[in-house]
Length: 146
Image (tube, rainbow, N blue to C red; front, side):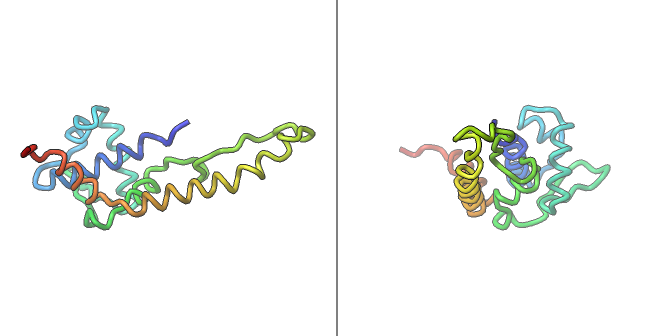
């Protein structure tokens, strides 16, 4: 099972809003870039708005970032779009056989490792900003001068 695609779509939305800041970033425009339905974009935009990452004006096409792109981390996006159930990246199966050597110990053996892995991922996401993603995309679009 993977993290919900809402995370990458959320990053896509915020990055495109920043790159298109002089234009109109409607849900239809954003959906065209993501190649998805505007309804899905509006749902994710609602989550981003609720978290204070974007401003959306009802009845008026267009969305703006609510903060500077340098102050929006990928961890902010990750937390905003409900990618996890019960705030756990990894779920350990329950109801293992209590008399089995592995069944009775697997949760206690895995939980610390999985918690550390989630914390490591969140630390990495916390050090990357929307500005970093915008700059990376801009760099990739520069003409090759070699």
